Image 1 (cartoon, helix red, strand yellow):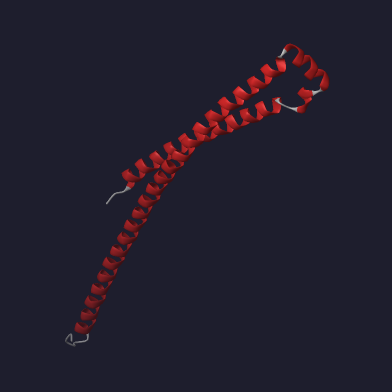
Image 2 (tube, one colour; image 1 turned 180 degrees about the horizontal axis):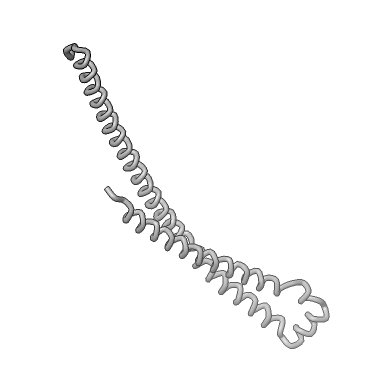
Length: 146
């Protein structure tokens, strides 16, 4: 049986799943970097006594903290969604990889079986040739075959 078309389809599906998974990983990396960037904005440098006094006087410190909190929360929600997609997608990639490996095993087994079959045919042909040669040699010697 020719498994090459089946292998081609399985290979294409695996590559598609793998590329899609890579996009999810890129999005996860981007969101994690964004969370870190927002966290870095809330540094002690922004909290010097002079800066805090001025910010408190106009209420900017409350607004700033609120914005940081909302931004971080929104990014973390996006990150949670991406992590859920990543988990689901890992199963799909594993399944596609498993199918590909199963088809590759089928191909290898079929080739091995084909090789065994050809070897058996060659051995049978060689044995037949040897038997015929033995008969010819015994006929040349004037002996009857036993």
